[in-house]
Length: 278
Image (cartoon, rainbow, N blue to C red; front, side, top):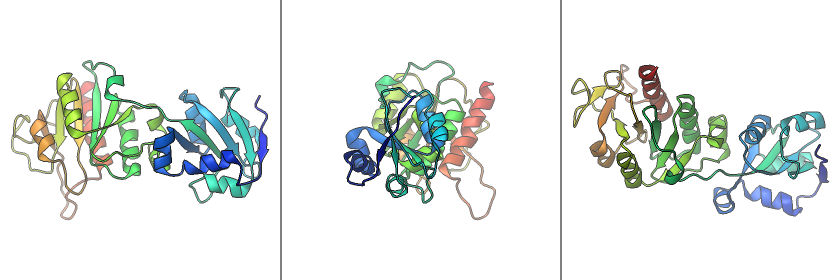
């Protein structure tokens, strides 16, 4: 049973260090992130992530609820009670639940990913700039059974609070690897993983091959496969379209919308792949 220790001052070194983790550069530098809220903290514990310390506010969350959220936490983890103003300093939400934890980030590289098999499915998010969009795509990818998400282009912080919340904590366990485009292409090719690139170009053939563009439901999405989703404003560049084994189109029937939100497009095609595999 953890015995919480009180902190009442914003000058406390632990508070000052934790507040810095609100900034992306400090998360990158330290390898730590803030898990805010009961669900986020509970799932971090359940995922086996290293929880460094926990802060909770008795005015917003009683001790019984806090201890229930920390069930399974290592006994060596420091737990502190803090005042309302201090929890608001740590939290991103305007109305915080009352609990925030400092957690060690899982770090993945391409070399950490297991060798693919016939059921392996990957999502490649190219040019995804907003953490919330990456989080939503990670949630979709995890639900579809993807082995990993490769985030290409400008590195995106998967442990931004918006990414964590949008992913419903999928970023805790689903490997998300920030990688350059060509490195991702080389990795997929070297492991025999077919590349399926989405494009707004009209359908130009039956089964997609070479320069043809196929309706996503007409393409064979079985076997080791990486679905590549481009940025919503510009779509995929020539490097990915040239590298693709398949080029897929999702029909747009409206008169104004010419594309889907990236996470929605990923969901449509990934679950067609799931349908074909099951």
